[in-house]
Length: 216
Image 1 (cartoon, rainbow, N blue to C red):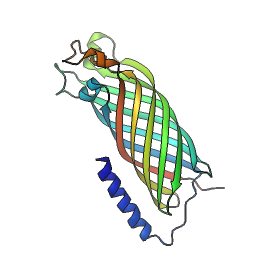
Image 2 (image 1 turned 180 degrees about the horizontal axis):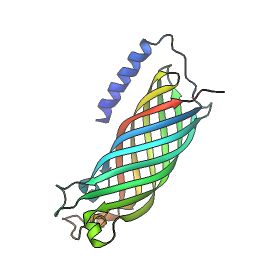
Image 3 (image 1 turned 180 degrees about the vertical axis):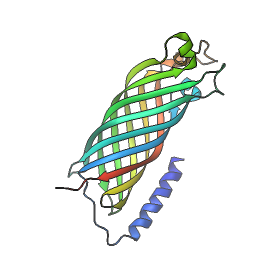
Image 4 (image 1 turned 30 degrees about the vertical axis):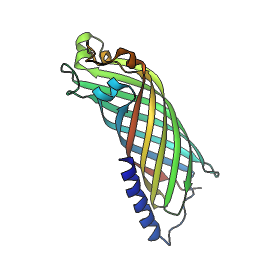
């Protein structure tokens, strides 16, 4: 799926570049970015099966140096719902993740209209497991704190000198092991408890918007 989206975006970038002979090159410095994507659970088998990603949102500020290196920071929110078809008994609710991060990266314009952005987000997250089962147990929401790391690749297509859009893909690891008991399940539904200690991984695929502030 990532390859298909990448091919489509590259085709659009090349088409836009051929039709923009009069465009001016962008030299970014201060930017405001917003990324919206669909997260999917990986690594931890129970998390991958039970939790269904619905949304990931990450607004952040970024500063671009003249040597293409970048640094920035922002906040991130994501939500994973309990997949009712993957649990042995009904559970309603999900996991809210809220936190902040710093981003280090490298960004370069390959033409007036097309750029690539390679980055690494490192941050701290709070997971809130909000389910009806936890509510009945008197521990709702169950709170889990952890650090996380998330490398990402962005393919950027500019609209004008102050705005651009991007397709991005990232893969992250959260520093906690998901257990079915976190959503209030007393039985493990056939999962090997030894795999609950595996770090919770997530793949995010989505689109973003960037606003380039004018230089003084």
